[in-house]
Length: 376
Image (cartoon, rainbow, N blue to C red):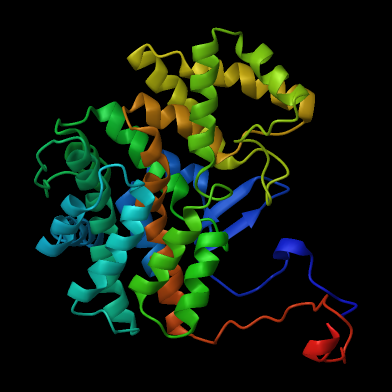
């Protein structure tokens, strides 16, 4: 047994080098390629941010126009993938459907086996467009609605809402989702991104890496927290209780309140700052009660537990105000995070070394005796 064992969960262990994302949890800093997330949320678009993640710099106007057109032109799903979406049970979890559909996509991708930079970039375009389309298509299929053809004149955020709802989204809704996609696009070596890099480091393909990342994101301790937050808000609404009294009762029963605290940030999650504002703006537009309820809970938890709201807390009310079903919250996380996953797979393949950590052995002391069957 080692005397220098890594902390449980590898907390604060530096496991790799990356030039993609920087986090300072004590100061509440998140940046992509050195650019602060607040600047990107206020001034950028998801397409421009994705260009930045994949290319290491902001694009010129001509480069962004070409990039946006390339991403829009990738909005195509193989017929067999659409048939698969029709064939699965309508009660299937959207994350299960997404995980399997992304794996299926590899069979039809001409660059599937490539781990070269250019091949990975081509796959990144296709996967970013296709993941959004899969989620929108499956949601319509399970509701008995006709599929909506992609509109290449719309932005990534607007086209997703168009294909999901069948109506052109408002500028407010498009901007809210676009900012949410920017905020979720990357977050250093989180569980799903690390899973993707471990898979990519074996020189497996991008589809395999992103399928693995989706599997990690599916877990409630990673991507499912915002769903739990919305279930909480719905429970408060159904109970008719004051939000603070409801949460107080949960704490007395030792029940976990999702959407607070973070393994990295010791101050406010900078992404929560923007999502709080969007939740408030969308609530005013729609007349919904979710923001006021969320704000009351946030202030109480901060006062009583000294915990800050994280990215999941206000994404719940933001997505609900956009008319998005709860079980699509985590898949929409993937619509955004695929940009970061792809960037990390590209970076890993460009300068690869197999990721193979060691474990601190805690079993019986060596050499343990082999006990014959008749003596056990």
